Length: 100
Figure 1: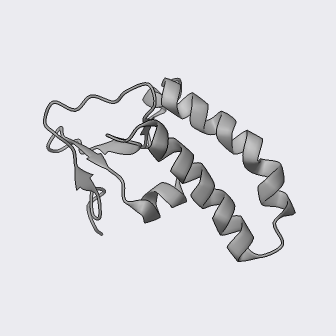
Figure 2: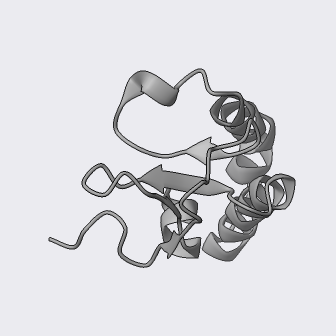
């Protein structure tokens, strides 16, 4: 099994998630983080467009739009995950961000 940070970009040692970042992980600890709350609202707002999409390509475009909005709000972070072993933050690549 690949580490959770495979395909992720390490962030500076002094990185701390901003209110615009979406913190990814299994813990409910970050559920109320501002970025995660915004992300859930954004998904709710885009859900009708996703449901109306007739093709996989159209659905993929909606997902890409959501990822772009999150990453544009936080150019230094976006979708981030903390490596528990090292304690360092990483920015998720495009594929894991789209999966989120």
